[in-house]
Length: 312
Ligand code: CP
Ligand code: NVA
Image (cartoon, protein in one colour):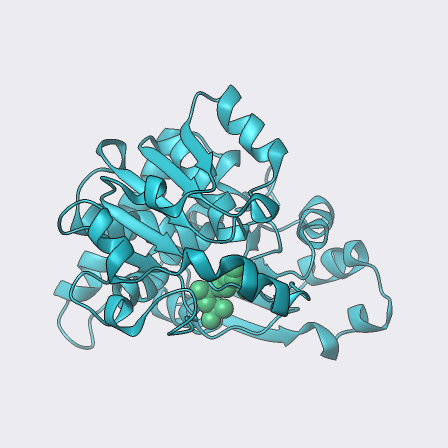
């Protein structure tokens, strides 16, 4: 293996030019596929012969299927592994797992129960490791989100984005995205569910235009897009209290009306209609949620090419 593996762990690890290059590759892959005659799509198969192992410590629909389809369309193959079926589940270390898998496959994607499992895997792996969500971040999702918002509204640097609800893993990747790519992010979160103070301090030091407050109406005023996520994430155990705390943060028509005219709605899915968002908003004309889901496929092709195409 020549040089250090090109991991994709967090948006903050990249500079603006690198992220723009990944997004440009993602858009190119989307155009190529849309324009190519049937049977001739992705003809050059840049990842032919490459194998991606996917480890899931948590369930997934979009991440699992979009990575598998992306690899196949690029000519590669995938191995899907549930963590409970591995010796990892019986106490083999993450580092030994990384060393062993690196002898078999060309890259590893992990959906990790703890962020430290991702970083330990990456530290010991000899092949690129991709973050397919941890309790702390979800960078693949936010690359697809940025791609989607730019397709529908315009360059992120010109936009105001509102995050309403839990200051969770997806919110953390949005903070990193705005710090690196520009734009303004206003978070409206309950005091007990604010993003990590260390991440907010980092964003401030990076001079990112990120503001936080407890008022959802102040967060959405004049925003081009309103984003929310489930009240209870996969790693959360306090469902009942979260429902109480987050009830005033529901994205409904009244809140959307306080955003800019024509403001878009985004959500990484899975969604819970009647909880964090009403059906009329998520199923309404300004909702981008299924374009976001589709763009996971295209954005991850850009990420896979970044991680794999350059290593010979
Ligand atoms: N948005 C997202 O990552 O969905 P899955 O949990 O289905 O992968
Ligand atoms: N915040 C959610 C995102 C799911 C894709 C979770 O971590 O469960």
